[in-house]
Length: 240
Ligand SMILES: C[S@@+](CC[C@H](N)C(=O)[O-])C[C@H]1O[C@@H](n2cnc3c(N)ncnc32)[C@H](O)[C@@H]1O
Image (cartoon, rainbow, N blue to C red; front, side):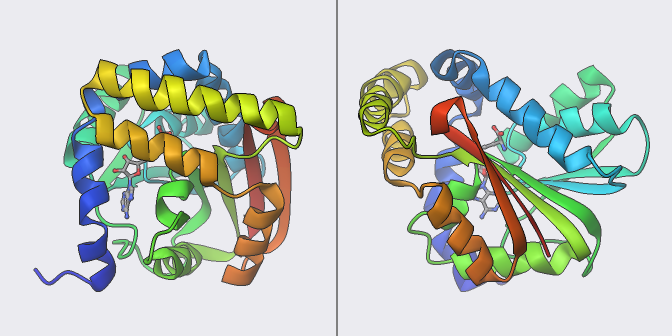
């Protein structure tokens, strides 16, 4: 199988995310004080707000958003989950089976999604938009794939770490990321490089207005955002 240049460049990230699934959920819950679950629940609500029928959880990881979407959809429509890390997908499949959540998972790169044009009413992404866009040379390709698989007027929902407006709070959050996530996360998981990258990319990631500009530039419209916990995270909602 030939790989696109984006897929070749994504290899180090793919390797990294294939090394973390064992303790990925535990570390997420621990370092966000379980707020990650609330933030995903808020994103799932946005995804399903208009009674969306066909929903994709892009970069589904261990499947938390996909399982929430399937539970919330209550058997209406179809929920798909896509990710390029087979170990993450293995955890996601087990989780969905345990929850009795009908999710169709696909192992694929976000640069080349195995879906027809306009397949989804909603694409949601939880804590992975940063991976696709932060200093990632494949960024434009990922964004155009999301637009391609969305139906006209379809919704794109991003829940992601953000930058608090208050300078003092922002400095404290950055310190927490560097010490707790990078150092302690690296120790607990045994994957120091992975957690150093996660903390570094979160500290340097876009604030809400920069992310809005990025989405508009990519071709999305009607971008709205909502800060979560003083801006530690944010939900962006936009349309194709
Ligand atoms: C930080 S995890 C987030 C997982 C999940 N969405 C969550 O809410 O916890 C990032 C996920 O994005 C996936 N990922 C990163 N780049 C990708 C790409 N180019 N194609 C497909 N999956 C990708 C990784 O394998 C990983 O599972």
